[in-house]
Image 1 (cartoon, rainbow, N blue to C red):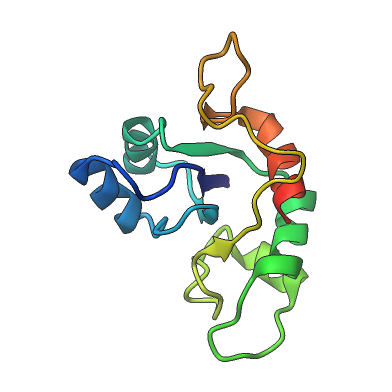
Image 2 (spheres, helix red, strand yellow):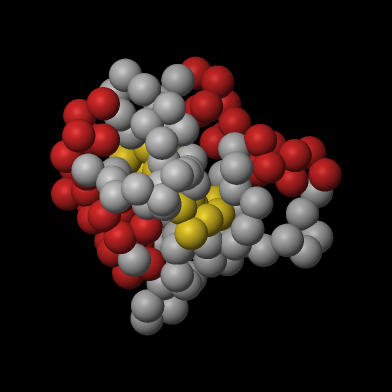
Length: 138
């Protein structure tokens, strides 16, 4: 699974980029979604990579994210282990969980404008380092 976190705000975002962000349910700053690595999803990530941070999420961080930030649609308690097992086959909405997560701003700050690999910013593909960012945002 790939986690996508919106880093940039709402001001001065081009219309096409904003439409893509809204389709992915990234409507606010510091909101996150889980997506599967399909060709269409990767093409959308490539289009909006200057406004988001994304990467492969580990199982431990996925369980922590679901435990702390998952919101049930009907207000019932969420069984995290059961959801992680079924997440490969179903999406979050069919499991009774809201399809997005609201996160805090990261502790100890964020280098949001630096997305080039030389400067080690947070925008774009972070591969495994996204787990550290999510841990600071929980």
